[in-house]
Image (cartoon, rainbow, N blue to C red; front, side, top):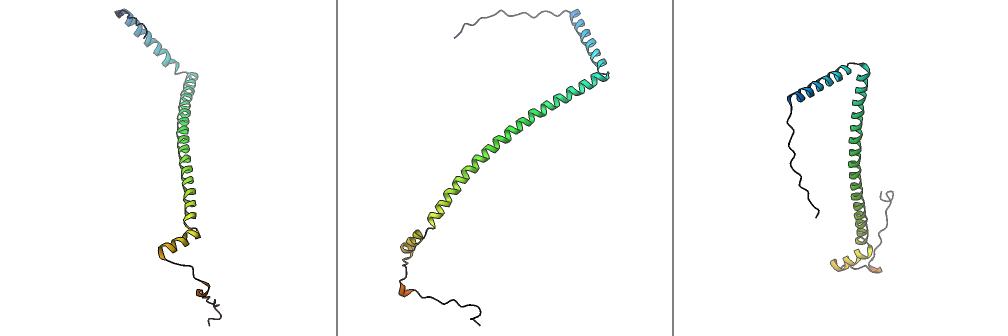
Length: 134
């Protein structure tokens, strides 16, 4: 921990009425010069350009902030999309595994006691064409 120096309190200087009056007169004189200067065309153009410059600067800052916020949102959405894509791939693999012929046949035998028919039990039904049916 460093050393701490305690300084004595500074007493505020008493204001002299004459000094205050001189300061106010100087401020009024300067403000009159500023207002007189704004009546000149060149000063008005410069003042308008300065206001436009400040407005444009504020617009750039706001635009940059919105751009960053939108980019962050885009990054989050892309990460979410990638996770959904991975989950979709897993679900497709699971569906493929669940619908495989071997699994369906195994479940049919286990749950419903089904068996594959022998050759003698298979009956072929002839396909009738629409013309032969008349």
